[in-house]
Length: 195
Length: 136
Image (cartoon, rainbow over the protein chains, first blue to last red):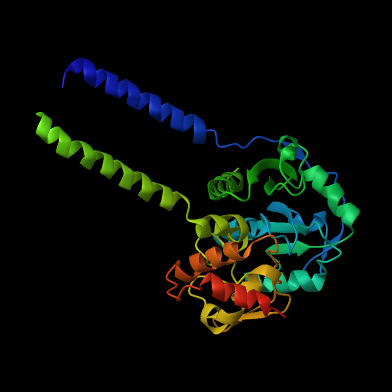
């Protein structure tokens, strides 16, 4: 190989390395919004109260679903299970799924669903409560996800996973129906835990 | 290339192209697979595994042989009561698919009956029609 070609290769190599660095080097996720001020009180699958205090000093992922949803929800739960398994033993991580059909999804229904998934209720909470309160909090979580409003079912039923940090700042939105985006979420959670 | 080889090779090539097009188009229109993707997959998943203890698998499910005679009605009208699949009880109700025609139901069932390691005998359209006439 000619020396000139060699130089090109080195230049390309350096370029690739520098790109990699800029992607992972600074290791900070953007702040996309906040739910610091948000107040709510729901109950989970064990009838335990869930409020902002529940997530003190934790990072958590939240989503909105309903147990009888035949469209995107099972896929979302399938993907959320992957997140659950990845962080099952990390006490700084929690998951929070809100039903958007509280009339049907009572504590008992959520409990059966959670048992079916085989999840621990102190790690992955499935909550129900006042419908208006649930939709109000959904609007706060989804504040920067407005661009997905065109999806069937609207904003609340967009299939989004929202990543919240220890200070209740919104740090990422991911399409919970897609394996690749869930992989990205898992990677970002690791970044967030190291911040 | 002389004329003689052309007269032999020409039709052979045309035949080959026709065969390839046929192969491709039958593969692209596996009705059962398409129906499964649209109507079943979001719950029973791409690989037929279902969702843990919430939604039962259709892959290697003993339900397919045990309840063979009720499968068409299950697809059309769904099920409210808990269901036992491979010894495990599933509480989740299954929604019906009343928009599917008899042929659709036969196609999607036959896709499930032969996929993901399932080796069940296919159901004829007549069998599906008979089942549907006798739904409770």
